[in-house]
Image 1 (tube, helix red, strand yellow):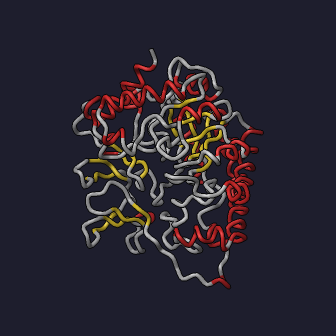
Image 2 (tube, rainbow, N blue to C red):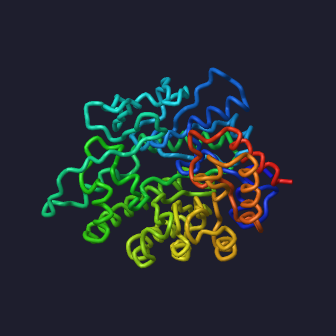
Length: 419
């Protein structure tokens, strides 16, 4: 099978020749640039090659065509024009991480030193405005900084939390046309589109690290409290956001058509390590109506499968994800409560494609031995890939300090599982 055929078989719950694999196609299925650098050096050499940081918030590295072929990766991604810090993937310049990794960052990637030696980063690279992200000394990725103006209830306007949502601009449309041509040059690959503007309540997006002067409710705690105390406000934000998103989806369907097989809709996390973050009733009241509208439109007009990313323990929410029309669940955090892989496959394997769950990135991959990584990967593939319906990936992104030998054991286990 080609990679596209392999992915399509999995999406249709047919057994492919081997499990399809994704690393690098989205911002939640990626590899930190330090880890990509070490993989490239081992597999491809090129000592002077610098890997591009394609997502600076988590410092994810580009998995390019050569590395994708070397690792046997099947899926490519069509990402938005701007990153989490509002940077565009152009005007690349050299940069060196705290751990010494050489890489390339976008021209708008500008940092200044913090008092503790860490780095501040700025929306669109504008160092004249307050920083929107911070990476502590010796760390591997950024956290958003809180830039919350005092809230005056009488003047609080849902439009302030909609500043980042708008119809696709001419520059955006040109970006997607270029992506479509880029995808056409790789016809044998599987492909996923990251749909802009449909991450309702995604807490990574609420602080708006891509805006220079965000207005509205931007503090993480204040936003979560508002889902209870200002529910009508949050619903109005979601209602207007959804209307914009539906128009953009129609535009993207016309531009991209069947060039992709999967559409990533949301990265909003609904689970914690120990249980759901929200009750099923809250999900059904606050989120599901908007998810259903998006999924219904896509399913009416395309053959795309729709993809929901939610970390944590979401076992009790999965039936409601299915009711909302989602076809694919990621990252399948088997280390969380109630997320036993055998149980998940038995109860939901006919309705959902599992995309992830292939190895524990909290313990096994970073801290286990290569043999332990190999065994866990083989076990997860054996469970999830029964009768198809599985795309291999780790549980969220591979982190920068993951041992190289453990990563190599992971990819060897995937290859060996194919026969």
